[in-house]
Image 1 (cartoon, helix red, strand yellow):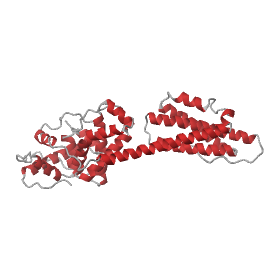
Image 2 (tube, chains in turn yellow, purple; image 1 turned 135 degrees about the horizontal axis):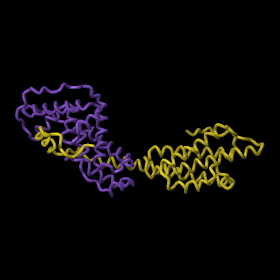
Image 3 (cartoon, one colour; image 1 turned 135 degrees about the vertical axis):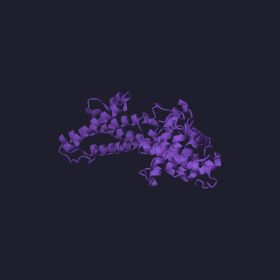
Image 4 (cartoon, chains in turn yellow, brown; image 1 turned 60 degrees about the vertical axis):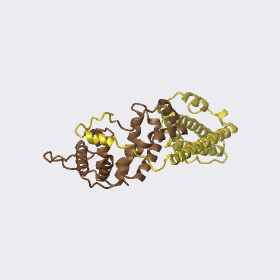
Amino acid sequence: MADMSYRNAPRDGDLAAAMRALPLAAPAGSEWPRLAEAFAARARRRRQARYAVAFATAAVLALAVGLGRLQLAQPVTGTSPATVATATTSEGNAALIARNQELQAMLRGFAAQNAPTDGEAALASARLEDLIAMLDVELGDAGTGDEARALWQQRLVLLQELANVRQQGQAAVAQQDGTVLQPANWVVD
Amino acid sequence: MTSFAIDVPQALIARLKQGDAKAYEQLYRLFERPVYTLAWRMLGDADEAREILHDAMLVLIDKLEQFRGESPFWGWLRQIVLNETLMRLRKRRIDYYDELPEPDASAQPPPAFSLESADLERALAQLSPLTRSIVWLYFVEGYTHEEIATSFSRTVSFSKTQVSRGTRKLREMLASTDTQVAYG
């Protein structure tokens, strides 16, 4: 960063002073209206994405509760999704990202097993995957502050729920001889 | 002192980070002219300078979370403007490798010259965008040769040579009464 003293021009001080004395230039018309519209459009896009994620999250969790999965679940990491969300509110972004990565690794393990899953679990998985993809888009635009932290927390809850759904779907199939579906082909990076 | 050196209150920065639209406008009003002036001086084109004003403000809002307050806010904004403007200059395919010879120390000094604003404006307009940019950053914005060299990805010697050459050309043009080119 440059310092503010005009240390640069002892010899050319007259010329430098004359340049600094030139009046500031201004655009022919204010650029603010165009900028305001750009800011407003960005804010609208973010709001819409946030509402969409919140709405869809509620819908998927309601579906899972309706299926009795939350009550039946033996959570993958030994804690419920709600516990995960609460526990992460004080964590920094780095810790949240690390926990997201742990769960992603676990989900990759499910994919590698290529185990069959039942239809309800496949549907819930697909919806959760869509939500996670939407969150990833938002994260790409969220920087590194509070907004990003909230998004990482939401993502962690969704990953936890996805892991539960997949685990239970596979368990359900193992206990029955009925029709099965292949697992959704979403791959966690 | 550079025209960018405007103290931005912490309260305003906090409102910016919260997405307060009125704070955005307040910031724009504070820095409209310094941002536009730097871009216009470097690029010499009014339309492009407007684009820089627009783009730099958007970039600033996008990167706001990265501002940690370790340097003045205005300095951070100025660096964004400089980076955006340099990208424009690079798109014009300016030859950054056009190393110039060191000025001849034995050359006759230029004669006395006019420092009328109008003459100076015309003389500045006749410098190449690259030379004018470096002269402006050095004399008006207070950047060091090292900082300029880093920004332009060139050597310190390159910066010194550009300043020396630009200064000499300005003095020669100001000594003449025939300077007559305006900015676009």
